Length: 242
Length: 328
Figure (cartoon, helix red, strand yellow):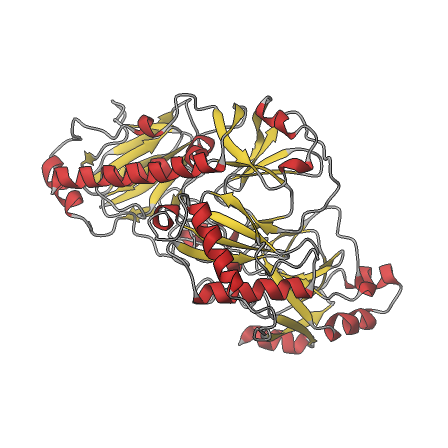
């Protein structure tokens, strides 16, 4: 029920004069995420006057537009908010709930676990009373889903961490290098930039998660799937040299 | 045209209207904190809205012109002056080569903008020239400006800029007798911030209390956001908000009940409940707040906020046309 946003009753609210969010539910759920991605895809093909960006999140899709442009559009309504709501509801009525969306891209991310670049691997293993090999096996055998991007450029919120690896975050954040792979609570992720963070760092990836010089600067996007691959220190260093 | 920084001041960066096309990759908006002042500085030298400006924080910076220049200064963080005289804001100023200029303390506000005819020539990163220090986006590897940094302009792009320069060019500092009336774009009371109810407004006990109380900008405030000191807000609903899109002007409530007002460099998503949203037309007022300043919030409807914003955009557009007509 609560995630049945597909229908005439889209819940839409403004977050600024130039942005509205559509609410699709209130729990982290694969089905809700698919609805959001489906609607986002449709909107990218059929945008409205003044629209310039969309931001998918766990349970919402936010649409940004330039009010001075949108107000001049022929959409029904006296205010941009009404015009945009009318447009989105009309578009939503065209979505077939059964329509499939392309499966998110599967992205392999090599990780060198442990060592100097994974200083908290031992802590995570000790915390769960398992071996470090078991931590690596559990972390690199799952297929994760990118629910949303946020926090810092190129950072992906991943779902699908094995319950056995849930580990509390550090009490004091420390600066971690770009590529660090961490665990915090039920979450796991890769830091695209060197920033202070409180996650338990179990390894490092030599892959660039964000490059501002590229047209598509972020390696990952909402809807993608991620699999980590354990690599040796030698491979890690070779990869870096390339 | 070129300047060289003599003293960088507190926090001096390049800013334009922001990096708006990569929000989905979690790239923040950035851009000028006070977009109104940045736009007015650009308008005064005949530039387009999107040209890069230099954003100064409070006073203390100094620079020297290394060629003849057409500049404009706007904002409330400082006054632009030579060793002898204070220069007028919000209008084009011709400054001959070799002039040292200083930023003198202006108690009224926090940030100021320096525009040059043609705009400052720094490379675009992801569609914007704005500095974003966290990710090193922008010229000078995304850092704030330092002593001896040199900033050239790009070629003059409008006939307004060219005729302004022709008319004002001379051996000494020269400016016309008109200026842009920036105060007409701002309310008389600059410490009452108009806000709309946020999505999670009803999650709090007596949330309307935020319209009655006074809040102080804490020292823990920067381009990402301001921590506000005041009565704490208690939660009526224990719900947890899942991270969702936020933007400059969003007022969040932390788990301790403290308010945070998000500003230009804020993250693209946030997980704290949103009690209110600052009206876009009052964001320039927020940009001019300093630690220690006390503010109040006044509720307006979302429809009123939208109307005010569109009206302001329209007025700025008409202003640009009027200046162009005067000099074409």
